[in-house]
Length: 366
Image 1 (cartoon, one colour):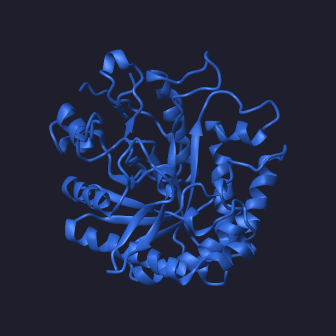
Image 2 (cartoon, one colour):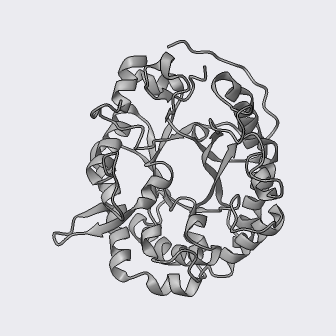
């Protein structure tokens, strides 16, 4: 594989650290082992840079599992023998289902390759109604469900210890605005954070608990970014129980660049895909952390350049991704993002004829 190094002068801001070079391990793409016609991650490493040198050669330091919305298709369940597992909420076809066995494979891979892991905890299974009131969300979460969350976190830590993997933290859900209002998500935090904190403990080396700050989506209507973000921040703050914020270590959001607007009047859509406005996102991060009175890390747990486009003449494929990718990274450094996970490790191929139908790794932009 041919590599290209580019030297870029970054603006003054936070120091670049290994935490800025994480990627999303999307299990539907990045299966550790080869299965059927789907090339697994081990195949990619063997094909490119001979085993473990593949990740090191790309400079990757952390993997977020299982990447994106896929985790929200599952619930947590503890069986009669006390074993916890991921159980699909609906019929899932076309891919192998997520489960603890695959999580174990993933963490073994992390341990063997010297990369750390972030684990997403599913949350949508905790409610039966989209955009239910905060009170309904709170009353609907059962002790059985909380016990399952505790069992899941405990199992992850156990597997990590047995495989030599390092867990950076646990992210509570993925893009909560698809199911919860801000008030509803606050009740999810109220219920889950103390349980997770109870498992992890208070030591200096305890794994991070990461909450979402989703402000680049909206329910409808033409509201400004500032109004929408403020509504969401206040919605979480007004329902968050005393003491819960003290247990949260970081705030996470997602940021993608995509050319064009979602609609002529959708100001939040225009903002959500504008890399030069990433400072607005960080400002909202800082506002929330200040309101909570906490010094919280700021995470972009998904970021990148969309390979799709809103029009046929505006597609960011191949080397066209390079400029906005560097622009986003520069903005992250300038405005103080502490941790970032690019989307995803193995990406949709940009040329089937040239790539034999296989997925392409990030870093190969051409």
